[in-house]
Image (tube, rainbow over all chains, first blue to last red):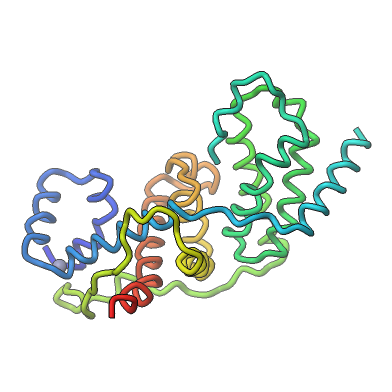
Length: 77
Length: 191
Ligand SMILES: [Zn+2]
């Protein structure tokens, strides 16, 4: 297995959706390739960081606009 | 969009409650999909209006968050189409960065960020938002819905009218591009 092949199948590897044999090949490659070990780690950090993104507050002027629009819509109904 | 576990209680969805509970989610999803504050504001207004008009349909209904996702994604896609802002930016293929022998063509450096760091600092937050905004739209939509909104692949496939394998493949590319965009920052911080 090459580094490129490992990266190509990384999604399935991380999801645990890889066939057993392929998964073993991946593990063997990782045992002897520090670049790929780091690559896998940083790929996972990327996912974790995105998961922890917090929401930006709704801008005040949009909140105000929304309140007006909603009030109007309520009056119409 | 999780529903905060509130759908089971007796409180009905009022416009005020929708406003407080859901406006930030709608706004953030739209902003990340569109990469543009002004468009995101229009979409948020559009979606909240639709919600208020259809509120009666959802009294105490747990399907509300799913429906809201759908309406928001559709409104964002429609907004994009309307403005014809679709960048024809060709995504470079992150899988190009390999030698013919299949080895990494550049050295892969470890990152200084701790994966279990609790709250993201302002700078990291902005860096990630910027990287997301820089993704080509085909990848960005899937990335935002999967890795930020944490929707399952089958729901994303349905929302974006894609097959599940297409969602997986785009998500993987998106993650590779995100990793690549973030790498220089986190490698740099090491030195
Ligand atoms: Zn390797």
